[in-house]
Amino acid sequence: MLRLTILIASLALAALANLTYAEDWREFRGPTGQGHYLGKALPIDWSVTKNVAWKQAIPGKGWSSPIVLDGRVYLTSAVPIDGSKDLSLQAICVDAAKGSIIWKKEVFRQESAAAPNIHKKNSHASPTPIADGKRIYVHFGHQGTACLDLDGKIVWSTKEHRYAPVHGNGGTPILVDNRLVFSTDGSDKQFVIALNTADGKVAWKTPRKTKVGQPFSFSTPLAIAVNGKIQIVSPASGAVMAYDADDGKEIWRVRYEGGYSVIPRPVYGHGMVYIGTGYNSPVVLAIKVDGKGDVTDSHVAWTLKKGAPHTPSLLLIDNELHAVSDGGIASCVDARTGKVHYQERVPGGYSASPFFADGRIYLQNEAGVTTVLRAGTTFEILATSDVKERTFASYAVVDGAIFLRSETQLYRIQKK
Image 1 (cartoon, rainbow, N blue to C red):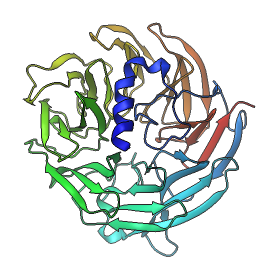
Image 2: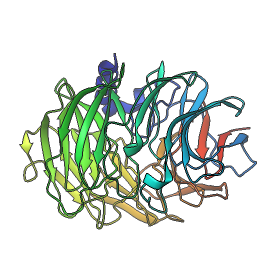
Image 3: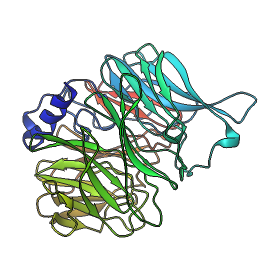
């Protein structure tokens, strides 16, 4: 069923306007993993009180984005333990209608003496949970991965796939064919792995086989349908690879010079995937997905250097590819050719990924300010809003409501 869902979603992107999505927002960037919402009308502006249905303090610190399933919001956090520098790595469930915390569950205990340092913008709970309708899967990078039922009981957990992280954890798993798939790109080892959702056992594991000076990255894969087969597209330091969802065998790869600490999740349409190549000088690549082997010289349709993001994911809307750079340059380019329609400055620095709804693009900066643009080839700011607190998490959007996570709060924002 999951394979069929992914196949339908991938093929339907070309006719996105005709899609009807389920209300749930079960993974990072929503139903197709690409930041699109079709549903009840959303507010265009808010404050810490205006158009706020509720806000709930969330214990600890975490930059995982919220997900929403059957009237509940799920997220993770790293909560300090009294009298210790250790952290309780928790899954948290919140009532989506009322904002009250339903349950909190410690999944792992992180011992401070053994925990590596993290980047100042990162947290120890940055990967976003993902749900299959009956269970929730949480991932803390090198600290472990687990499956919980909807009442917070741990079904299975594993800490077998440890690695040496740089800057902490980041990339989020995806679900494909009853398997949980994620990348592991540390300083010591780099691979993509699929775990059986039933028990957490390894279904397949594929080494990256790249030789780069700085091999660490934090990307989230994207599953796409190509000629009736599911490919898992996973960017890494120095190259992006596509893997066969059945057995993890590499299908194709595109190399890029100098790229490392790759974060943006790919997007897909027009027979191409669009990726960012990471630090120090990011480039957006448009790659045709029908190749085999090393297709660096044959399948890159176009590139964009100016305005490419290090961190936020891209946003594909019909024939336009939109991006916001970490430094606050909003870009719109023709997704088929790479022709630039506009590049304009928006306020602040950016880490969260944008989303599209109601003919608008929602951009959230690191200071908690959301800028809403009109979608299209002409730059127009429609509104700005401010929750007056840092945020690096991306949105969840369900049933006319935006769930926004700031440094200490979770907001439900909707029209009043």
